[in-house]
Length: 90
Image (cartoon, rainbow, N blue to C red):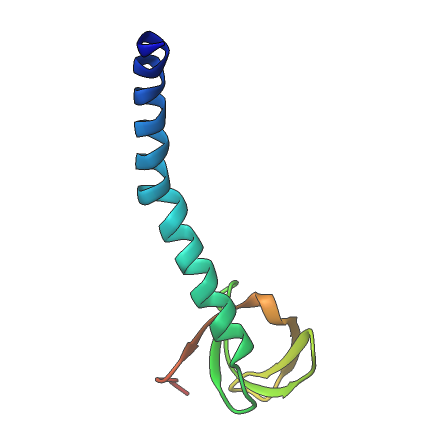
């Protein structure tokens, strides 16, 4: 019985290391991103996952319309917003 337990210890230790170094930080980043996407409002300056900068012009449940500096309006899924920024260069 102790032999079986000794064989499981390295496996459990490896799982614990993976959890604290990889899984847990990724879950925290995902939670932070979802909270940011849920708190978006019209007028916020944002960057999409494709790197496009713009200002939120309109919103509904699942999509966001972004206005760029030249006045072009584009519709994106809410999940396509990578970050909300405070500085926006025109």
